[in-house]
Image (cartoon, rainbow, N blue to C red; front, side):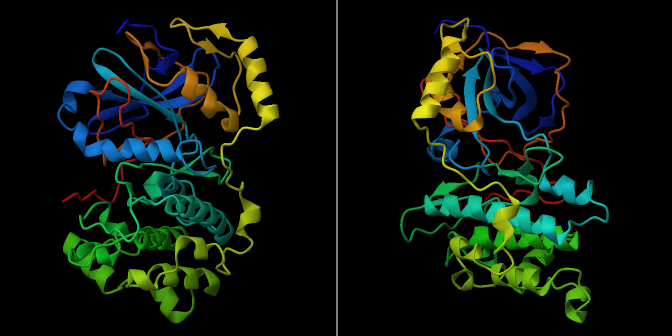
Length: 384
């Protein structure tokens, strides 16, 4: 393979670290668009490629298909490293917003309602396409900017495509967000575990702390299995959250997965009935005739790249960007990315990884890429 120059300029200072990766903000040299670039060192993940064959299939299904799902934009490699380029979530994650950027360590019910509706919408889209996320948590819910509540659900390292009536039996994910059926390997689990995690997130937003976060793992498991999470305020009726919000949490946190509402039905819960007006509605990344003409215009005004593909010299809207990048940029090879110490936009993202997934870096045509991950400051990923 002939080495070519990268289409991206990487910030010299990383914005996140993981066990096998480092994350940088990057800029496309031809469009000026900013993204997050996750760099994997090949020799650190050698031999682990078979673990992530399903992740490639999932990313192909979900990238640029929904307004509230983080998308893979591009991938390229150097002699020693492999890079994944994704949407840059400049607003940090939900954990940071609750803990560090709220006035009293919790979110208003208005904000929680908007965020929950978007999260439910993204989850329902995944479930409708037979994908179980398995790691929905505050650290994997990113915001497009600091000024808005528009979110992007990321980290598909533990996600799986399920066949009809198929169940999973391994214990994977973040303990404080795990549903009780995950601890019973004879029963198995399915899509309802994502609904449970949505309930945990909503509780966290409104109460300011996780419902299941004890001093030890065993105590946390016991609290989850035996539903020991009610705050004193709930029991006394003095909670700031409304009865509608509490009812949705109770529905999501039913001990039996079969008794929880499916993600589609969550949208019709009375707590979320008017929430769709607060957020950008999810859209499919479809292209009509006018959009195709717009792409043609961009290409006519493009600047040739060093590896022969055409690149436009202005930012493509998110709904238009995916088809162009998939045909022009996907899988580029470069000798070494150019690094600079400054980029024109602030490095606001917090994109570290808890590494719930690894990469197949040895396939030359298609490799299973991963989306942005995030380190939990309170929870640990348990993979058995």
